Length: 479
Image 1 (cartoon, rainbow, N blue to C red):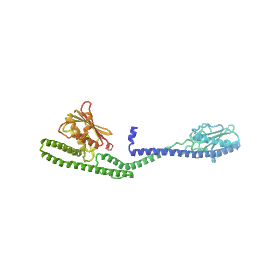
Image 2: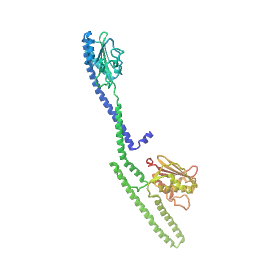
Image 3: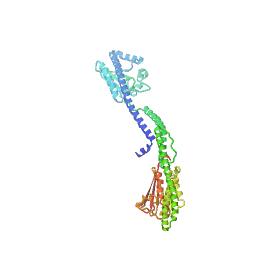
Image 4: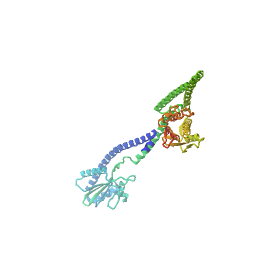
């Protein structure tokens, strides 16, 4: 069931499946009603033909019964030589054993119809045998003589149709003691003495051919119509990573054009909003430098040296906040195009100068679509932290159909459990060294969030810290 769902995830495949089911269901239902209607019509025709044949047989039986015994064989020879009868007629001294065809409901109705006509027209109740036989297995004249063994001059040609082998109706009636009148004839078309199939082989071939053409046209149509929809889905996925991507071309069905136009307008509004916020933030941060410098000059004019030192410390902290804010915006908002990134190659570039401290578990990984410079800055920050506090770092990559995971493990002291979430806050630091401003982890997580991923910090049981990065595989099926 899981494979079936995976196979029919796309709109095109589901439409093709729905078309196949619809065509088969429609053809089956229509064929069922058509066969039923056609079968009823042909059954009526067969019954009517059986009545007419029975009436003709009744006339022939009455004719031979009325002839004197010495003329019957003479008339029989004339019939064989000159024709003039629809029946194969013979006078036999015994009843011929007939090998019947397979029983069916229609066969029973035909025999009953012929029996009713004959019994109603005969004045005496004579022994009457009615049966259907195959032409290849029909016994005539004697029980050891087959129809196909007779010469054409004996009238056998009237019971043999080269293009078909319809069943033959055989009537045997004892007109005199020890003398049986043998009548054999083919019912007029239709030759319907067995139940019809719901769908014939010819209908199956026609169904397969029409279904193939229909599926081909539907596939071409929907493939063309869903391509703009796929482009829209890709653009929506990439917008969280690259807000400055080019507007989509409005094409496809009316509904898809409307959705594309709405997406382009939304992206344009977000671009303007982000640009205005960045401009405002940069302007405020830049403008703060002037009053900070002015305050430093005024602090130097103070007579109290202790107050001057305190003023300068506060101004240093304020200036660090401004520089940190500018650095956070600069390193998080990286304007670069989205492209396929070789993660293993990127990790090897980061570790090439510290191969003795950084171990990269190399394996085959599908390219990941993202911003290479931003990812390199994020991973470099995390790996350098691991080397700084844990001396040795191991990096592993786990790739599957849903996501790409990057696992960074070190042997350092780890992070207190109550600080695992607050450590991402700006200027949050757990060590008193002079390097850094406490922005690295927050910037790294923002870059991962911009790629629709997530970053988690986990304290290892054996000691050290594990950084788990999860990046969704949005584009893997297109690579």
